[in-house]
Image (cartoon, rainbow, N blue to C red):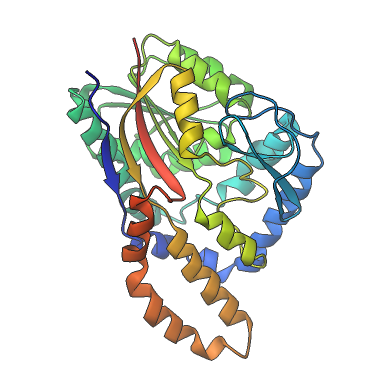
Length: 351
């Protein structure tokens, strides 16, 4: 009999607020870059099939930042109305060696890098290792392959927790260079976009991880097929963004930087679309962790909006004092109802 998956809810917002101060101070600059990428995206051909289940889709359910979005009637995945063409993916991730995209995840120095690893990625590693142990594994003896590894933050976190075999794969040369410069012990491999699925087919890791990556892959179904057919792999650990209340907040704050659904993030999963992909490709869920940033985003959106107006700027401190202390409690209620902007899930391959 299959055991029910382990379920975790909630995460403290303090570390995120500390690291993401640019979201408050560089709103206009970041919003302009999102709109630029949106123009690149809408220049691509219209999408005719769901990125999640591959079934036909048509029409537009809503428009945000000039981009149309379609909810798949088959699996409920939220699709951007245009194709993720090779040209679009290159514009987002690899043009100029990926330097522009790397600015979203870079750390200014070794101290900042280590802080990011500790505050953001160590909790992810702890959750994964704990879930593997509950599933009867010795997690520190397993081999890990992190795809879309960025600057090696998650690999560093796994190593910090005692994992002996961990390697990262990344398409951005700028991020690989940063990882090697800051942490010489991190094993990183740069590869081309079209090499992602073949590498997933050939990796000898026990655990493949995708931290905020599946939604960015040009052909996610191809990647999942490759992992599921790789006999060396037992688990897939992924973190994905969800179609959550955060999207509705972004709809009513169009002049505030959009974190969840925007030019570089044009696809969002639902619990149902994740279930669809997991079942289709032969995985079973063993653990999940629901936590979101809806309340952090609402906090930010109101604060930045108030600071933009001379009429309300003087009340910003009052807003921060009133809403800041209740962010985590309010968010936890959303998380418990699976209304989070993000979920981490550990999948085991059925064999």
